[in-house]
Image 1 (cartoon, rainbow, N blue to C red):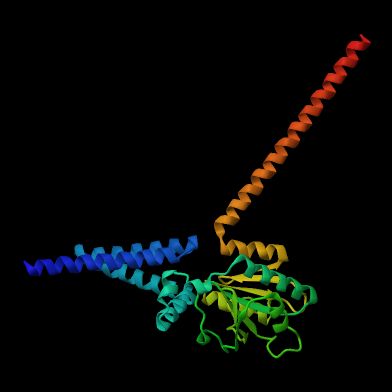
Image 2: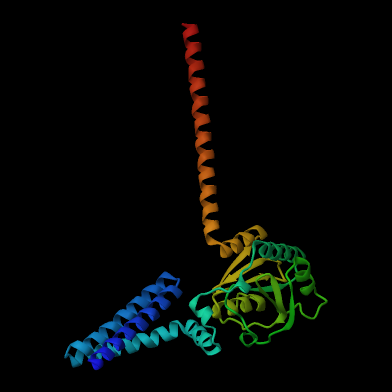
Length: 300
């Protein structure tokens, strides 16, 4: 009796752990194509397990195992960045980041984004290069960078950012790390990305490199040559953008629901204005028709 109880407990724990792992994988995947690939791979794995467990089909089992192995190698090549990020998070013990729990120290406010936008706009006007890394929950640590930089630990302000990226200061070539409402360090050297080497400069490659490895951080880049603004997120670079567009993107990252509601409000207001303009045009045409009819009756 105790033996059957242990077997049932083992099966229950197996199902719970497998379900928790599946939920964790599906909640962390955001792109639709990646989600399709993951579903197909899990289907093949479950099919191989079913054939080996319940069907006496040795040739089919060998073929399904070979197919699963080939798909595993293909996914390892396609998802090498994601797998590297997963191993780094597991190796450094950042389980809260892996589970998607954002701590209070990473929660930026609208004032923080306003200060960032103001500083980036003034740097863009003066054509001074800048690279600002905003940690949104990746829990970036010194070992994640090529050089951790100089500790600052000061309240974020646009004036301090302008001073850090001044041309005659020793920290202007590196990146500034921001967590929440504070500047953590300056002069940080980031790992470079391998994509777009011929198109982008060192600052843009550094922004792409850190956002490829950690999906919960963003980078604001100001080009020193042209003064254009760029925003890097999840290994993608949006450029060139204006200061107002940068502020809108930062607000969307802070609260996506508010951005969608503001978009719906703007659409509704535009629809209202267009409908009111149509009504006024219709009323004017009616008045003109009535005047023409009156003039015809007077002539008759």
